[in-house]
Structures are given as structure tokens and as C-alpha cells.
Image 1 (cartoon, one colour):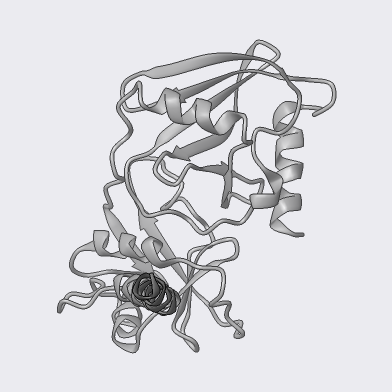
Image 2 (cartoon, one colour):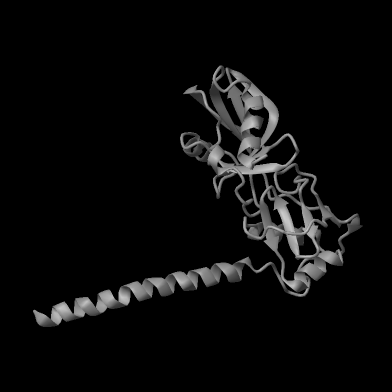
Length: 254
């Protein structure tokens, strides 16, 4: 079943019947309090189904969302919100966290409410186990994997090793039951449709169940972002240079 279909089915169960019931309020909750807003005439799913399957954002502070349906607070489904990316995470029936964007009407409301409350902190990590073996060193080092997830590094192999990240704080990252490692291809799956390809040295850390990047290595998303920035600047320079010469030529002819 496609991720978008899973989310659609989940929210049909969440609001009962999308055509018979309406969303009448939204509540954004942080570490100690909540901020809420009333709504009317909102008779569709609160998330954009077409955006289902977004890669998870960097691990950090976050919020919980409670929707009000026909005047009643709906707490059956666990919903999270990461304000920097604007993404929400929905717990599907399989237990996975599906990341997707809010409906365009709800997105600015959620962001405004989030500014009014202090968020829940970055989830602390108590332990990490890989294939049942406890990771030595800093278990929190495995959170950096989420900063480099993408939709491209899909594995072709079928052999997997389960990864479990234990945190005392319920959150949309470490609760993911699909966390797994594909040893034949050095790929880690982080959520439905989201993967990260590891460098050989980092893959060796995973296979040895030890702290990730203990000798100074890290998941190289910064290098990738830097390379993209260089390419972008080069493209701008290439586009600007002929225009600069043309401007000079016109100025000289005057």
C-alpha cells in the first residue's frame, strides 16, 4: 500500500468520516502547556495526503498535536509537529511515523500556536541496540542519522538487522519500528521510504555496535549540502558572467 493511502486510511479512522465530521479545533502542546485555536468549516484531513512519505527532519525539539473533532478532543492517534520543517508525524496503524505537511490552511495556524509554548526537548537516548547487541559509547550519536535521510538510497537486498533506539520521552524519531540496517549495501532505513547510505567506516561502526563516528567521523550530510551550495553558486556565476559583459559593452557604447 502506498504511503499516501496509508495516511488517508489512518485519518479516515482518525476523524470517523471525512464527509460527516469536521475539524473544530487544533491544540499544540509543548513541555508544560498548550496553545489552541478554534476552527469551523474544516471538513477534510488535516494533512496534505500528496506530501506523505517526507524524509524525517533533524532530531530536535518538537510538539504534540491534539485535534478537536466536532467539539471533542481526539487523542486516539498520536500526532507530532516539528516547527522548523513544518512537518507533522502521524503514527500509522503499523506503528510507523509518517512525516507529511499540514494542509495549507492549518500550517500557519500550527506555526503560530507553536510560538506561544515552549517545545518538548530533543529526545534523550538511553540506549541503542543493533540486532540485539547494545551499542557501546554514546548511544545519542545515532540521532545524527536522521539529519541525512532521503528517498533515493533504496536498498535492493532483503537481509536486515533491526535497530532500536530507546528514549524515555515519546517522540516520532526513536519510536519508529522500521529502523533497520541493510548490511549488504550499508543502508539504514529511518522511516517508510526514507533511507541513508553510510560511508564504509560508519557502516563498520553500526556492524560493530559501537558509537557512531567515535573517531571524529560523522554522517556526511554537511559535505553533501556544501557541494550542492558550490554547484549552485557556480551556476549563478555562469549565468551572471555573460550578462556582466553585456552590461559593460552597452555602457562603453554610450
